[in-house]
Amino acid sequence: MTERKKGLHELYSESPSQADEELWGRTADPVSRRGFVRGSGLAAMSVALGASIPFAQYMPGGLIPAALAQSDEEFTLPGKSGLVVLNDRPINAEVPAHLLDDPVTPASRMFVRNNGIPPSTFDVDPQAWEIRVEGEACERPQVFTLRDLQARFKHHTLQLQLECGGNGRSEFYPGAKGNQWTTGAIGCPEWTGVRLGDVLKECGVGENAVYVAYEGADSHLSGDPTKVPISRGVPVQKALEEESLLVWAMNGKPLPELHGYPVRMLCSGWPASVSGKWVTRVLVRDRIHDGAKMTGQSYRVPCKPVAPGSKVSDDEMCIIESMPVKSLITFPKSGVSHSLGSKLTLRGHAWAGDTRVKSLFTSIDFGATWQKAQLSKPKNRLAWQHWSASVEFPVDGYYEVWARAVDKHGRSQPMVLPGWNPRGYLNNACHRVAVKVTA
Ligand SMILES: Nc1nc2c(c(=O)[nH]1)N[C@H]1C(S)=C(S)[C@@H](COP(=O)(O)O)O[C@H]1N2
Ligand SMILES: [Mo]
Image (cartoon, rainbow, N blue to C red):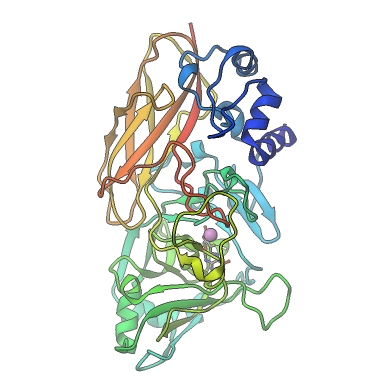
């Protein structure tokens, strides 16, 4: 089962049009590489899906039907349930969309992304954990224990989204190396900690301050102690935002080991790689931070759009800042059967990097028409928003429900893949689920 699904993704990532032809015998437009399902290909696809496709004339080619695209495979990590493992060294696991239905993501449903080997923190004294705040632009370098942070600064609890910059990578063509995230490297738990800004101000942010970066206690995959797995940061203005925190709790409990116990940084709305786990140092830099995975092609996209497959030199790559607008359909689970004549409730979440989602639309005809959904306000800035809708289907058959969010500035999720980039970041294409409507 698992093998077949992986095979399908591989087939499509190598060549979507060829995959279409091999699987369904349909031909795609050789210029745009996008065709529409027709003829015997349509019949073959309907057989595989077990239903006819009423809106087939709008169904783009080169797209794995959602009914076949999503995996059910389960993997167990301590404290996790239902996560799909993408790699076990380092541990990386994502969450199937239907398991992200909770308004506040429980720790058991939070994706895990490690660039190195997590430190063994099971028997550390959390209160005595030390964080050094220093750097060229830090006026009064200091060491704080977690106990100091908790005693000296005001506590804040906020619901904040965390999304890996590479979430959605598996869909890019040509493909990019790295964890083949589908849609599940996102979560929005509630975090408790102190404002990073309060701590920084206590240490004096010099006029020459440019960036604030973290270092963590994890070690490099090679085992070489002189190498750092990851050390990233954000411009000072982002670090000083009210929602940028140093947190010790997730949903009212101590941070789980895999999520950075006992203290992590949290700068929500930007690639989650800026939210350092197991933080040991906070650096106030007088330049753009140049730590591991800040330079070269890491967490960068071409400054100007490029053709898929292009080679882009390092000096033409720009650091990713805010994540783009995006949404998930968390109910129903892809592949459900629904009886004709009754309404189907849909729901999910939407988020927009460091801005807000203005509206959310759903479609049951591959984006030919869209209906506006109900959308909640975020619990606080940088929390995801919940949406719900109810749809009726005209006849029985195979449908895909698509969701499309639009942010405050009018920027929409694309229906096809957004700007190709060498490392496969920022895929915010519409999420879709398969629904089989039975008479
Ligand atoms: N110290 C440290 N912090 C880190 C990482 C890491 O490997 N080491 N990975 C980053 C990346 S790329 C992501 S996507 C998030 C993942 O956070 P999570 O595992 O809590 O979901 O942590 C970030 N912080
Ligand atoms: Mo990430």
